[in-house]
Length: 225
Length: 117
Image 1 (tube, each protein chain N blue to C red):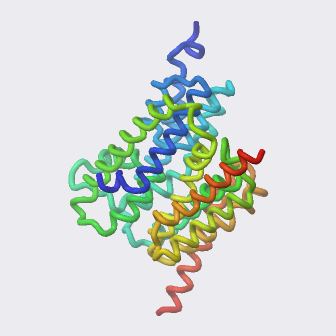
Image 2 (spheres, rainbow over the protein chains, first blue to last red):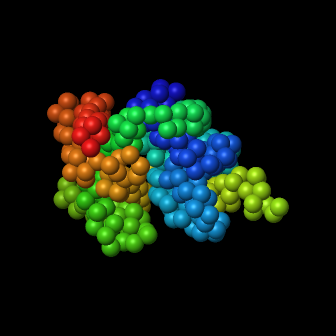
């Protein structure tokens, strides 16, 4: 619960206020938007879905765009899973836990899970995940009600909250050289791949930045020996 | 009226075109990571890819923003990130003060830009 009420919790609150405003603008049903928070639980995918719906795109086209944006769930989930191994329930509990993986839970999870006792990790992660989903649902409703009433300067500030807070949280959490280097390479490569990478630019940035960071980690490790 | 136009269509779309294409990657990752140790080299590599991917998401939000943020010049958006990061480092890695500094510049810029235009 402490994690869910931290800075990242406030950022999520602000992000879903924006989502609530967006669906009202697009005339997307509020119930389906709440369902998307429960079932999809990934803001970029949700935005792609509702804007695709509003544009009248075919379901297959929307599914493809959502799938591409959600490929990043793979490395995020894989890197958390070794910390989420329940004593009982096995793979079923792991699949449920994986559902809560999204940027916020990944940032908080990577920071807190490694320092926790093995028995406390799975309950912590479920508690945090459910608190975050609940908070986001409330924020969607608030944003839906507030839509169009926020002053321009404040609405601009809300949109900037996501990039600045994620950058600083990730910088503060970066433990090893691979974390710091991946962050730096990712930021540096992103504009380059945005020019040449086409639709999959973020995926290429992730692969290239992650590989470069891992190579640096290997070189430094070998030197130490 | 077909299902494709009915009031239930957005709900079905959430499940078919939203939930399934997202959850597949989370589920695949669960099976991929089974039996892997938390300190294994492959997971250190995967952690690097995840971190770089999120860095790319951050960069995109600043370089190619949407909505109200688009009304601010690129230099101001990048400047606010740099200011936030500098304050974060100077204030003994305080995430809160860093966010506050970056936000102050963005909100002031949006306020000023609005009143001058």
